[in-house]
Image (cartoon, rainbow, N blue to C red; front, top):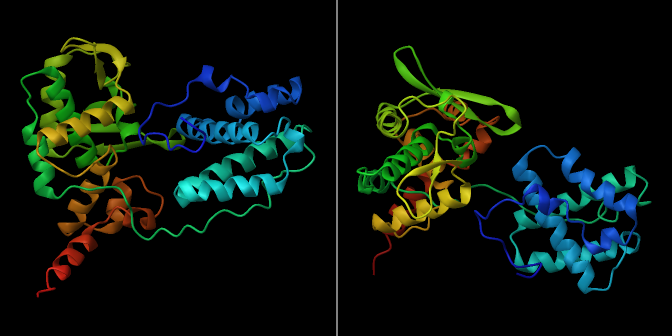
Amino acid sequence: MDALTPAPRDSQSLTAPDLLVVPAIVSESGAGAARRFIEFFTVTIRNPNTRSAYGRAVRDFCDWCQTTGLDRLGRIEPVHVGAYVELLTRKRTPATVKQHLAALRMLFDWLVAGQILKINPAAAVKGPKHVVRSGKTPVLAPEEAKALLESIDVGTVIGLRDRALIGLMIFSFARIGAALAMNAEDLFHQQRRLWLRLHEKGGKHHVMPCHHALEAYLLDYIETVDPVAEPKRPLFRAAIRGTKALGPNRLTRARAFEMVRRRARQAGIPTLICNHSFRATGITAYLRNDGQLDRAAQMAAHASTRTTQLYDRRRDEVLLDEVERIRL
């Protein structure tokens, strides 16, 4: 995979050992630069998803520098960063280009503060314009979501797990990362209902009551696989390879993505959905049934209703109806 080949949407995150491998352009700049480079990922960035994304962005840039003959950090100038951004713009989406540029700016700022570089060569470089008015995540119609849940064979513990996970993302608007981070103790009874605790970004906890259908899915799963689970044990666990039993390890986002695609194919759903599709599916279904936007934002743990509106796909239905008015 070359430096400008897009990584799979749900690829595995870079691990700590990956981030400790210093690119040649950094190591050739001295021991201080190498140490500062490692500190950038291990000290300044706490979110593992951000760390992984920035790690890929920085390594792609370092690989490109090597192909162009730049062998030391001090030789990188704004024109080089600008040329890289221009090349990146031809092959990646504006959002991805802006993320890569943000990673480079932050890294170079850290190197300037550590007196490794005199100036930040990415500071003056402008990224592409990126205006987002609607989300692009594929969503399911209510009947498709229902068909998907009903198509899962719950005669196995794997089927119970998959139905519970998909149901959790639909009925609680949960991100896949927050869902997979849950432990057994994050399900609890309160006010005669089952509640769940999601581990959101920034170390925040988001607590929500379960929809009655989700409560049934979760209880069926728990009572079958782990009726007396240890509080710290992962709620959604990966299967032991070659068996239909669950092991002790937490299910990863990549494995969940593969599961979602497989279940959609089995249900005869042609839409190329991803883990995030269920968040948009649930929010759209809620708003379609006279739900309030501010309540949807609260349920989705969004700081602003503007973010929630990106998940509202009711406008797509209107466009579809209007397009059918074209008659020849």
